Image (cartoon, rainbow, N blue to C red; front, top):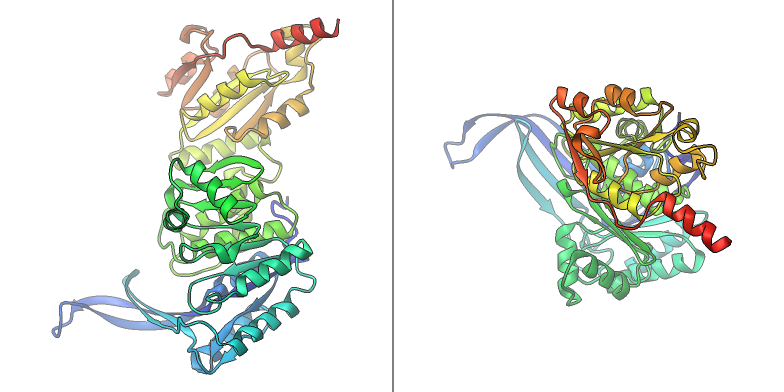
Length: 480
């Protein structure tokens, strides 16, 4: 089953500061007699596209058609950049500037650890002729494109008004434009579809606009001040926070991975986000896919793109997309086993969830807060009828499952046909079993099973004065 959109049918344009990442790889076996520094015995040397080039590489690895606009120097690193772009199948030639060197970042790696980085760059603004040249590149590249990425590394390309001109152009054509920002002043990004700051960049922008208070208040202030549709704040091990002008906040937890190197993680996030939006994916799903891609890339050493195959594998493993959150018992068992092997605490609750109401939502949110992943066991239609009578359910199991899957707190939905979830609990072996406060621990189905493998039962308060039966009675009374 294909879990990702048809990336190969869509084109994304990247504009920004293109770099060459150079790596010297070797071993450290002694300290220099000249100074207290390690001596690296170089074994081999590699180079990769960095900055906006790494964004383009990520898009190409996902299967997108990618076009790149930017600047390079008239030097050997610039020639290497061009060759790498052609090898990756990335369209577009970089503008050669007499006034700028090609930005290079040279990293010395000893024994798998980065020891030092050497930067060679020009950070002054582009001259008028070069700026016009890049804009002409963009005008040619954007024809037929489905999304645009502004990759601002604060080197040269966006020190003038180029970002604003690109955003205006995209907005007039209905093309989504995403920005990886640099610096606290976002005035040049006004009107962008989404800006993707890390936590430090978010705080800098907040201070620049004199915004304070809770995170959500600050985020919504930035959305308004910079006229943005969305703001996606990346927070490393704390995951991501998505805010929309006309949407509720979505918190996206980081996926458990062994972290080797965070280099290029921001590039991976924005490229995956752009690929998804270009393919017509909604913003929240796109953000979750970008989060999964980031979880893959931090497990690699150096700036490396995430392939479509790697992303599909991550999505399948985490159960984030592809068939949605609604799974069969066997699929759920495999997914829960993977979660538990990664140290995630699995929470289970169950019910009919017929005519979903605020009491249900509060229960699910409380259950989710007890662990790392929430599984909901859902009574099938036949099961509900046996328990509630021939007039129930009001909504069939497909509708009820879809509504549960739409709740952010829920990670997995499994439909069961028995009168109780005992067999499902036995199969999934959750760490925590949650029910409403109208139960006692002893009356919760499966409490003995969960205790047998070291788990526990937790009871959460109910919302007073609301239940499905009361909602049905109220509707009948009002309708006569």
